[in-house]
Image 1 (tube, rainbow, N blue to C red):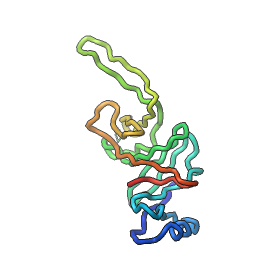
Image 2 (cartoon, protein in one colour):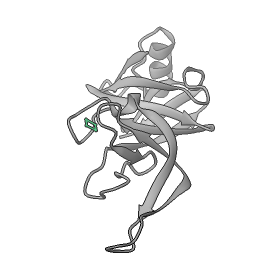
Image 3 (cartoon, rainbow, N blue to C red):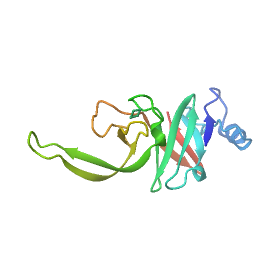
Image 4 (cartoon, rainbow, N blue to C red):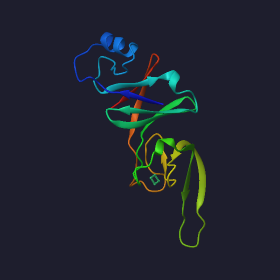
Length: 153
Ligand code: FES
């Protein structure tokens, strides 16, 4: 599923935005914050599901994990793969005590997503690569208001 969204850049108020959204043009803001963009309805993203939306020309995945919504840019920093189409699991983290020692791995309760192209994994909340903090995908704050899911840009 793909929704096209964006702000109109004008001074449209909340009622006008709502009317446009109801008419099928999903361009809508909350009327008070030009950087808050409606991207889909809550019903579009049930638990365990995701949608890829277009936000001002940028693909963003909105992903529901156990009722919590995450938003991640759908462009992997490795080779720009569609990271938001990847498998979601709890993050597996490891520490290496040193030469001659075994890697100590443990699962966290934090959700992570694995890019389907080459498997790079990222924390869904922060976007940071699980193995190398020098890499990350952009994340967005998600706000649910009424039946709408908004991103803070
Ligand atoms: S493009 Fe994502 S891991 Fe390579």
